[in-house]
Image 1 (cartoon, rainbow, N blue to C red):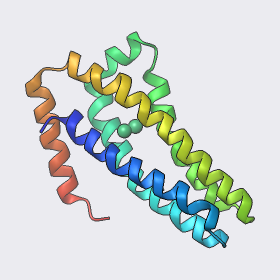
Image 2 (cartoon, rainbow, N blue to C red):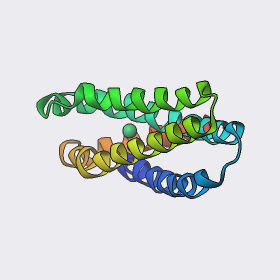
Image 3 (cartoon, helix red, strand yellow):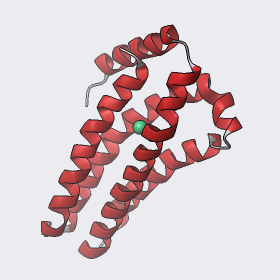
Length: 147
Ligand SMILES: [Fe+2]
Ligand SMILES: [Fe+2]
C-alpha cells in the first residue's frame, strides 16, 4: 500500500470521528465529558501527525519549500495539538465545548488541505516504489502502536 493511501484511509476514520464529536458536543453536560473527547482526539491524532511529520516532511521537504508551506505544515500539527491541550485547561463547560469544536473545525481544514495539496503532491513527486516503501514503514509503525 502507498503511504498516501494509508494516510488517506486514516483521514476517513478521522472525518467520521469529527462528525461524531460535532454531533455529540451540544449534548455534553460536563466539562469532564468534553475533556475526555478532546483527550481521545489528541491521542489518536498524535500518531497520525507524527507519521506525517516523520515520513512526509523529509522526502517532500523541497516541495513544501517551493510552495512556501513547509513551516505551515508543521505548525498546523502543533496548533491542533495545543488547541486540544487547551481544552484540558478549561474550567467552564461552554468554553471547553467551544475550544473542542474549534479544534475539530481547524483539523478539518488541515485535513482538507492535505487531501487537496499534500497527498497529490507526494504522488506526483515521489516514485511509486518510494510511496510503497513509506507505506510499509507506516504499516510496521502501526503494528507496534498500542493505543
Ligand atoms: Fe496532518
Ligand atoms: Fe493528515
